[in-house]
Image 1: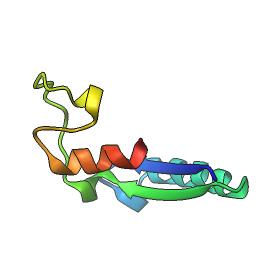
Image 2: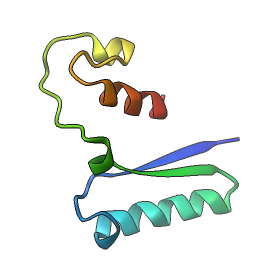
Image 3: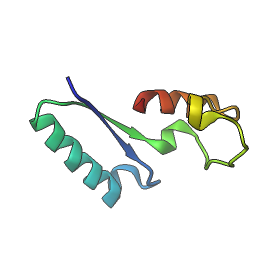
Image 4: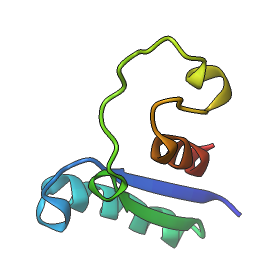
Length: 76
């Protein structure tokens, strides 16, 4: 089965246009038989990448944030 994750980065959560767009895309994926999951980045407490030079893009492990590593694992 195909799995699709929708990530909403807007701090407005369900009130924002980003949520509506992501939800519409997930609804379409569900109609086609995909398993879906909706996540709000605000719930994850992650900040922007600081380009610290670690190998996170190669191995998926962020040396600055365990939560970023957990989030990365969802989409890989």
